[in-house]
Image 1 (cartoon, one colour):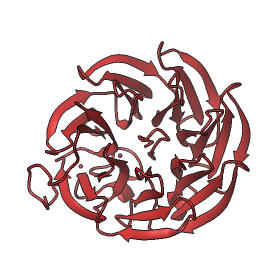
Image 2: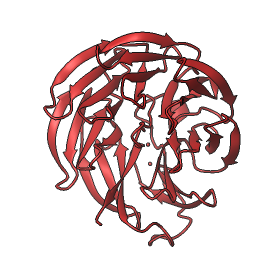
Image 3: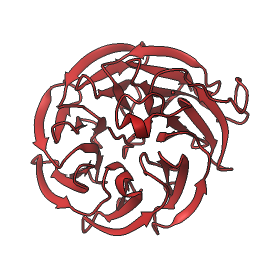
Length: 345
């Protein structure tokens, strides 16, 4: 299965033994306010929570079967975990770390994205080619929408009037009118295996990963058409925007590196090499100074021959220097989705 980043900063939007490159303590200069890093570990059916500064696992919270991606509500009070194995969503209270709801979704629920007003959650379901629209407060299903093949992620237009769905199975984007909850257009020619997707800060572009063709597509949201492709790396997968919105960082699963893309031009800015084995999903710290990239272990989803890695965990990257400063081993399991949330003052 594929995984993503959201337009709200998730996923949106990411465990053999790793060599720890910078010790086990606090990373020097790691941000001002406290934050947590939440990792969906598919093999143990739990979300592992790490302290953002010490990078130690401080809690493990049960989720559904094969938890795939984590998305926080805008206030950070709830985490919604899409479960590929049980085809549902686990809603977790982030303060108590207790499950408060389990919401049925479509087959192999892959990722959750919230509408800009926070009133609805859209769940992409690759197994049956649908998107489940859920009332985010009542946790009730509003509608099931048929889209393309193997939908992976939903991202909203800046005004919230359109929802874009990356369909990895047929290399398209479905465009949903959020008022009528109907598909109004299909955008062809994004990359095969279309998965990760972010929207530019001005709302004018989408950047979409297409790992099946080792490319990233730039989509004009005014015309809803692909305007440029960038071929780089091997199996582009996750994606996230830097804090200033100028760059999109894309982990490439098979080449184990990150492509840094200029959102305005669609050009390649730089490559961060040797990030890890089977780099998957990426999330930035709330202050934008660190990037966290999951590296797969014994794969529970996707093709195990291609996706299974030898160093399951998280690679931590210093954004300013574009260098890996630490690798955090999460022994055993299969870490996939990753998201961060601010805690404390």
